[in-house]
Length: 394
Image 1 (cartoon, rainbow, N blue to C red):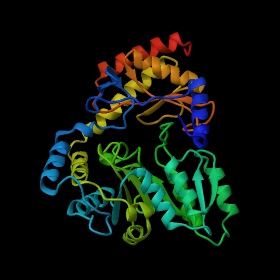
Image 2 (image 1 turned 60 degrees about the vertical axis):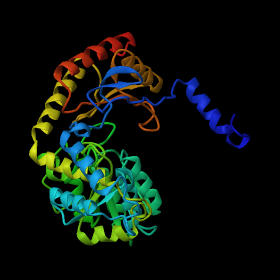
Image 3 (image 1 turned 60 degrees about the horizontal axis):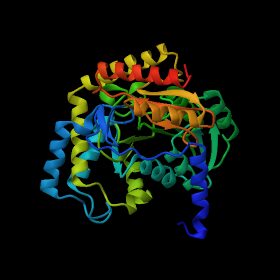
Image 4 (image 1 turned 135 degrees about the vertical axis):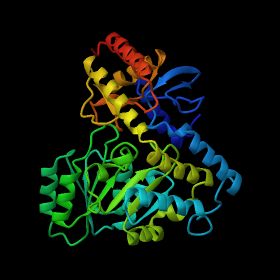
């Protein structure tokens, strides 16, 4: 029974249940695999960010075990006190070399990397120019910075320039920020055009490459490499929690920028550093990216097979250009019902509605991985077709 002062939360939950918009967490009972057990049921897993299958890669598992045996299960402190271990330094050097930048710093998550960086480098006298579909971590970082926030319509370069012209005489700093790959639509930012604008109007250029790390560019170096923009993007944020297969986030930039973040980014200053096992597994992951490019080739082959199959069924995959492929249905209750019935028939693909996506653009979000077989994906397409017909989506 909720206390009187918290009853409003129970009331809001009741509304969600009445609208059939409440969701219960699916519980994974096996490794994060292409076919896995959730809630006691074996399903084709189209819900994971494990793009390359590295969560179960033997090299990562071996590295994690060895690091635990040698260094223990935790670091015991924040980085600025006693929590900077050799493995953390080695990981940051590995990332910087991989991304072809001067330096990098690792955060506890991609979310804290974005939020902590934007909050640290800007203040209330500054202006942020942000794509309307940027990730929640960017939005929160913008709010925490107290800077003025100007939003341009999704991927609308002309609208972005209009804003930049309006504020070109503004006295403060200007930050132009975008996702590299947008997490709900799977489309790629017009990064070359945005970089040109940043240079033309004197903006700091920042990109969140969470969903392109390990996916786009040579050996998965991300959108900066994909578009050959090395040296022209001031700050790159990436994740260690998706294609890299472990946990965390990182920021790549000039050395002075990274050192400043070590002095001012609040998540870095006030959160205990990664366990040795995680740092070691991430180092191993970057080695795998260099040594096994076939994984990325397999990811894109599976992506084409599955995306083409959805389109042939007449399903709306929106603007997707990457392994993130939405099936847009519009109504949130319908999307959640679609997801539940897919699960009952052997496919786990989550329903996504407001506030994660705009009202009226609810969808099923799918992600294929390098380790799916085409037989598994073909079976998933059969299930999508049957359920979509039953719900009169097609």
